[in-house]
Each structure stands twice: as structure tokens, then as C-alpha cells.
Length: 66
Image (cartoon, rainbow, N blue to C red; front, side, top):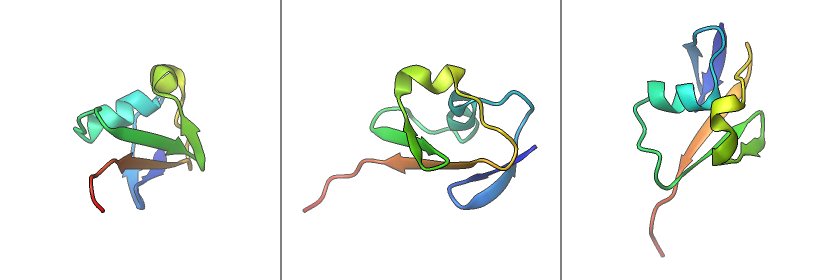
């Protein structure tokens, strides 16, 4: 199945979850937020939230600045 992750289409395994997408990208989980189809997914729900074919996943990293 394919999903759009941070603007690029990626092939994902059937049964992929938000947590597996974050892991696939090798992103350290501190200081990030994930939105699935424009809705923020609480970190406690990443492992149980499925990413479906055609979904849009945005992974945002917090940065310091002024």
C-alpha cells in the first residue's frame, strides 16, 4: 500500500501503524508530533492507529528558535 509521508509517497507494509512509520523513517521519538490525515495522533495511540492506503502522514519536529 502507499501513503504520503511528509509529502513523498512511500510503500508501506499492510497493517502499518503510525508507530511503524516513525520507526521506518528512523526518527528519534523525542520532540516530535504526528498528524494523520490532518488530525494529530496522541503518542499513546501511535501503536494502535492504522495508516491506510492513501493516508497522509506528517511528522513534525520541534525546534528551538526565536
